[in-house]
Image (cartoon, rainbow, N blue to C red; front, side, top):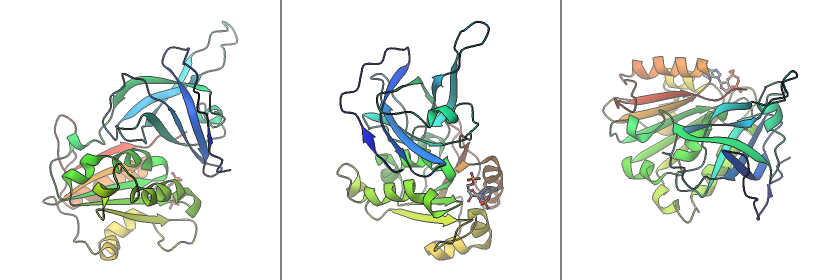
Length: 275
Ligand code: A2P
């Protein structure tokens, strides 16, 4: 596990919409990340997602294969030469049961039509930006914490990440740690980014669901910041359906309204890919 394999001479894609895998890293038996070549024409806003996948098994009758595609947040920033993705492995999941076996040099299908609501354009200007993630919901924020606009637009950026156990936090933890020394963005990040990891099923310095910590006010006390207010605070949420529903209610309780690309407001939500 944790093998980071890389190929330098990537082969030219042959399938339509095919991209070549350049590296794969397995974080736990449930989680892995990988990087692929980026289509020269692909432009996206940090936080958006694309459809990616593999060819499915041949139809037993016709022998024809159909692409098996799912929505995946792009975890790399808009300025990166490659694209990064962070995925769960579901043993009987139609796509991830296969995708988890990709190796450098393999090809995946990537439809180059980025979309999504976890973008700066969907929020009104504010002072403090919250990123609330559970599990693989950290992927869009892995992009946004590497996006210069995040630090140009806000005085303070707080990333919370809640996972079942400590090992599942590692992808986010290593990324946050690496930003301070990042030659491209380190200076811009400075002390603006704060990281608040919690676990729910394994002992760690901070335990519990983020929703409980928001309701009790423990989160604000721990960070030494005032409670969320619509005048100063903006939020982006990405996790399971349950997390998203609960956080919507909590954020609206603080007076924040849900925004969209066409109608920016104070918070935005998107479901993390599952399966
Ligand atoms: P819990 O262990 O209490 O269910 P998963 O791995 O199932 O995607 O979950 C990722 C993390 O999200 C877990 O720590 C889980 O906590 C937490 N979580 C799941 N549902 C909610 C919810 N409705 N509100 C807050 N946290 C949640």
